[in-house]
View 1 (spheres, rainbow, N blue to C red):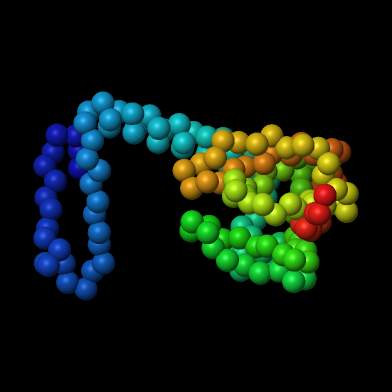
View 2: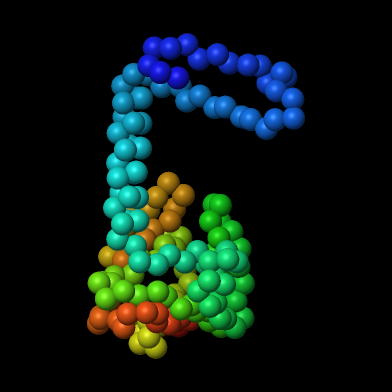
Length: 165
């Protein structure tokens, strides 16, 4: 409702054949301002990232993997903290959409993931050490790799394989 206007609430028992849930955060005025600033910052960062993103793959989700030509050997999928993932004793890979201006690749993993993985982009191992983000509230970090060379526009294969080194 508009600022200062009353909001009429209806008891749940009167909502027949409807599925609604309403949660109200409780916060002091100062806490509310801090929450608003935090949400605005998160939204700004998400928008900046979305504007820079050329392609996005959600491993372990059927449609995004299918759209990117998933291939694998001895791989499985699962979920962790409401995020889908794929892991492999063998390998898995996709066709990544590429534009000329592509300069880096971001990969999100669990901070406590002990499995070492080699990333092959265009059949060349990414050997550059990534920049690592701070862990989010669920314990995920983002690895940012600078691409070693310009990639051909169109698509390029990316493959993830266990790395014993």
